[in-house]
Length: 174
Image 1 (cartoon, one colour):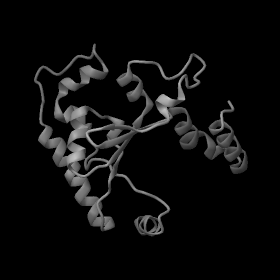
Image 2 (cartoon, one colour):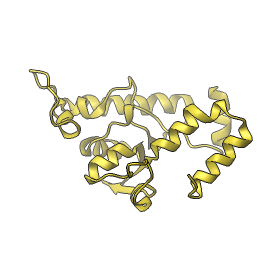
Image 3 (cartoon, helix red, strand yellow):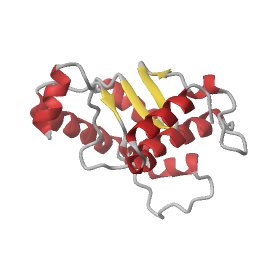
Image 4 (spheres, helix red, strand yellow):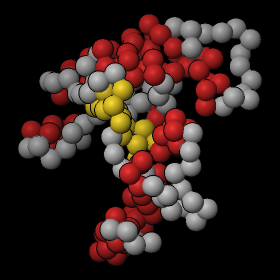
């Protein structure tokens, strides 16, 4: 598959992003207390773990491995489990990452507002469907529902019907 990816990159058909080398949750490598940001009531380990240098090493190892395979350094990253923090974005930016992708729930928590109504419809599309910039890293947030349709639902459908449904949803139909 790697030769096929190389070919598609060379033709400009895809951009490949990376994840940290051993797939760690980078914010927790930086500091286990970061778990409290997303889950204020979580029980933390008795002994705090705080090693941002390990997070940097995981990212650098991933970048080096990627470069060894593809002969260039990527500028995009999908963090393991979509986990991000301000410190992780800063580390990534210093390592040459220009953009990161993560999930809409991270955006919802960051903005401290709901992105969907009780029916699951996006309330203010301009909040989700745009990039955000932090420390010179552009951050995009995936539409979780659309992602699940692509990843888990459409593969079981007739391809033409799946494409029509996808286009319909993109153009505002439900």
